[in-house]
Image 1 (cartoon, rainbow, N blue to C red):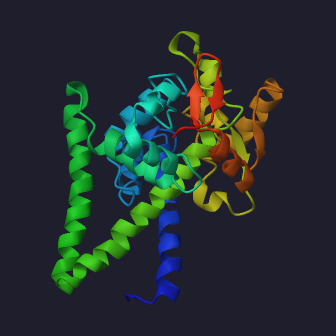
Image 2 (image 1 turned 30 degrees about the vertical axis):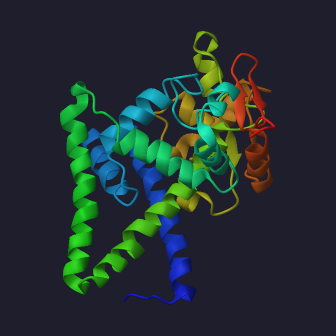
Length: 293
């Protein structure tokens, strides 16, 4: 049954966006080969779970597993929420500066993720020859899902199928981007978390000091599968999601005073978007926008 009644449609969109994010977290775990003992089962689950979020698994594995996890918060290497210096910001031009203010503001996480992570690092990503066959295969799977569902809905509903496709594929995907963009932001962008020049970076600074352990309210992990318990995931990508709370407690005991552990609070996110605009990599300090922009 289909509905266009906003009283039903909007809540259904919100639920579908959160569900796509939850499935993506399952796929993320499987793409790390952490969810099951079987590599084949991990591969199948990763590809199925990432269909609603339109992510090609092998492209994701390269950017996330190899680059982000290998160089977390390392200047010029980690591409996820990489901050600009004052000089880089001033070179953007008026439009680029306005876009940066939107994406680094309290409502811009989805726009940032859609443009910088999904579009630039997934869709437009130049495929390395070493992984050419695997990445092309997984991009083809996503294209088949997206285009095939559009063709099927047009066959069922005529031109009204475009609206049906927008309702069940496009808008849930955009809401997924908003949810996962916020998740990634709170993992790594905080006033007390600094990014490091390449020569000063080390794994402890990136994997322990560079992220957080955030505890959600009851029922939270029904959808988010402990992804907010993020430090142990960076310490060892092979820890399955359902073991992360146990690992987090052990890490907090082993490194007292080094672990950022707290409840999830909207106020913390808003404060981070207010303070964390530009970055001085040499001093490790967050800076506001220049007063003349």
